[in-house]
Image 1 (cartoon, rainbow, N blue to C red):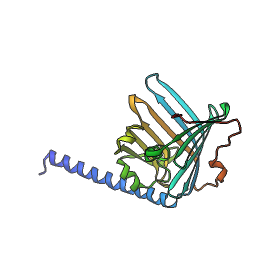
Image 2: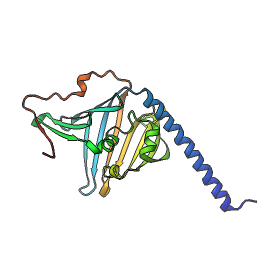
Image 3: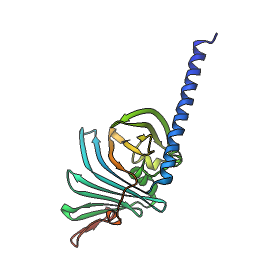
Image 4: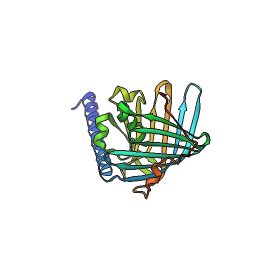
Length: 225
């Protein structure tokens, strides 16, 4: 007769094996989605929470992604609470505020991979690439907006990535292999929640979407001067 301890260890082993199988299945769905990924359009809600002041900064708009060679480009058209555009392209991040006619430019340089992980995580990336950059744990299935998803916990392997977030959670659409929701945990208890809806993949997106519509009055500013 098996002891309670042996039964418990057997149960834990079976559970770990089931989780490993489920994780492998989700990552394969992401691999398949990445292999065919070209363009995507979605509505978003980004909620940045700052624990120290107990405040939420919520932004709403439409985001666009497309594959360009081996890179993924992103344009976020932030409509609320104030018009703003965030463009990630050619290793550069630009934030355009039409109201004050200013573009803040950040060259990613040596931090290219880390910043890209933060901006385009869950869209166009393969499951195998995810495993290379993070320790990935399967957290079970959850339903979001009537869509079945798998929840994954990500712990960055790179210390540089940990400067942006200490851990992240992705909710992967089990039918399409892309992220419907993301939560990034940051220092001091801060966090960023991103929710996506009305997803179109592939989407008809013109080249002009990935250009900032600046004017002759627009000033371009770099934080490093």
